[in-house]
Amino acid sequence: MRENGVSGRPLIGVSTYLESKVSWGVWELPAALLPAGYPRLVRAAGGLTAMLPPDDPSYAAEVVARLDGVVVAGGPDVEPERYGAAREERTGPPARERDAWELALIEAALASGTPLLGICRGMQLMNVALGGTLVQHMEGHVERVGAFGTHAVKPVPGTLYESVVPEASTDVPTYHHQAVDRLGRDLVVSAYAEDGTIEAVELPRPAWALGVQWHPEMGEDTRVMAALVRAAS
Image (cartoon, rainbow, N blue to C red):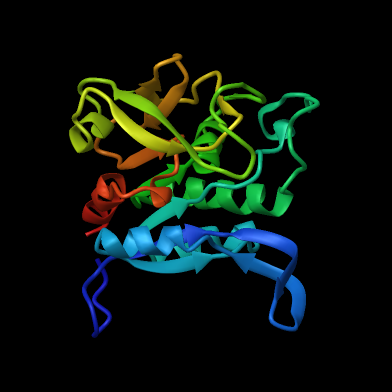
């Protein structure tokens, strides 16, 4: 944890969206943006937020070296070519700058031992970074377009996730149509949905690297982010 003369709270970098046209006031411009739920959750968990907009992937290790923890946020579908698959009809348009940058952030965090949390797309990218593949479309995890739903998640005993959220079942905010298919190298499953969908993955200790398929920034439960912040301390 880096002391900055003002606060000893860990600095948590969170990746951002990159949109070609965003409107505010009289402006309509390209923008890097982050839904406000992410910095709210980091703050509630005891951390400080730094936004990490897409940049040259060669800078990722230098950026991660200045952080105490990394969060790869939710967002668009991962480009199927990243895991050797042909694009299916219901896969969304590519976000190549985000894919390249966030994969580099993940690799830098894993190489340096910096605590890492992947959220939704971020969990999927963690899996792809470690050689795994994705299911490009599934039903039942989006209640309606543009609205988060909830469903139950069950932890796997003995995992990092189970040590953070020990209840036998917890309702979580969810919105996704893709999921982990073949598990990436060294990853273990740490939670499932009731339909068998993989809902959390992690690397074995001593690494602190956890991916969750749901969106904790859209709920009131701070425990997953608080665990990242503690690890970053």
